[in-house]
Image (tube, rainbow, N blue to C red; front, side, top):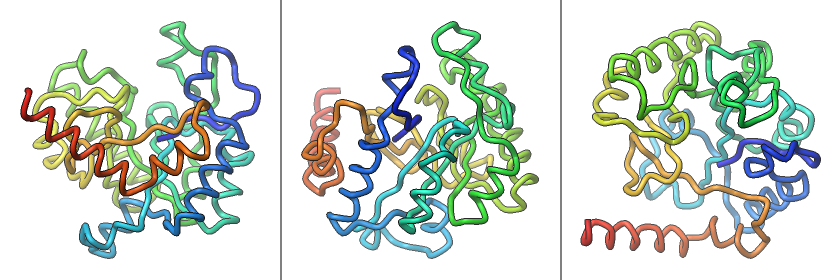
Length: 239
């Protein structure tokens, strides 16, 4: 899970930012371990089963900062890699209004429609990050359904293709999420530190400024996946 790649981030956004060098290290590690990047679109289109995904990895970017086009996008394309970009649909061509309004973050411009289309046409996946980037724990179920449907419809009209994955803003997964996403027509739901991972609340692994070559390689390894699986089992026992 990634948000921003920037060598000179504002202090308030440092926790969500890695440097260009760290981003290159991540991509180098993926290649060194013999992994291939993919997208949820590709998985669904190819009908791959779980055993066929063992050597695959999915890179995700939340919010779609426009400056990802300065280094991240060209680098991914140059390396022949793919990623999934999650956009808060009401802010296409706008800025991170939800952060600025709360007073927590500086203003960051987001990708516009032409940039999203460019990504989609060049092997990247565009997914929904909600319409208004609302807290899933603070809105009603009907409001959440509206977020699912409105964002999906707008994106599909923009991209002229189905939008199949939804990324929960703030990682907040509401009640009955699996039924709500399935009814709205999504194939996957993407969370952050969800205790129990499943198709509609897939847990991601964050890459941070503090990560090293060793920690990144571990996070990409089968050992780490097994570790997370064992922790899930223990949590279920003591729940």
